[in-house]
View: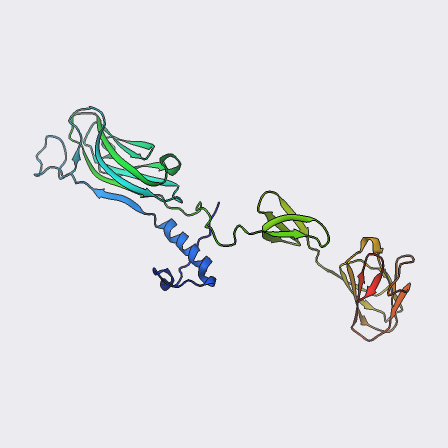
Length: 319
């Protein structure tokens, strides 16, 4: 699940320990903290154990030849050289383990163990003096306080080999942080049409076009249709539709607007603006259906007079 991260910094005073955080700053502060900790992962250990001061196994060398952790003289299995504790945070996904080895010839291995997870890095002559890394997943190692050990082994050759540097660091987190728990996240609202059963209990509404999609706090998605009003201009008689706004020009003669059937128009409206007058605007019910108790409603009025009719499900009323 993605976690919001800030692209720009807040005022430094908001990040000081003990600084007051107001309600309007809460989400921005969380985003900033996510960005900071995600892009500046903690280092558990970054230790130089020494550096080779010369090259070759028998050539003239400066004394001392090394300050590093030296490998055994012959291949004789792994030996532990470092042991320390690391605190793996719950949001950490991967831990990077790296080591630099001086190896003029032959082969060597460095093994990192964190909790229950192990990764081994192999080295050849071409890798001498260059850090190589391996990744340990926290799903394998576990989180919280864990013991980390570093073992080294000469696998081939008779050359002097030294472990020069060791690094254990959380991998940068930029897109897979778990969502923070914010007050109100678990609260839900009931979405329903008036007089009907609850459609779904949801905690988030997504507005997409003319629809509202309700993301369920449990499972499933409910769609609540929101119909936008449509506009048309009329200069002659027409059949009106609900959720329409009409402008009427009666300069050429009476204009009759025939209303839709009440059975399919309950709780809907028809809006008409008599924009240009000259003759009458006449509302005519469907069949024997009535408007304010009459079969028709005539509006002469003045220019730009607006008429809104509301359907109760059994008749039309002037609103």
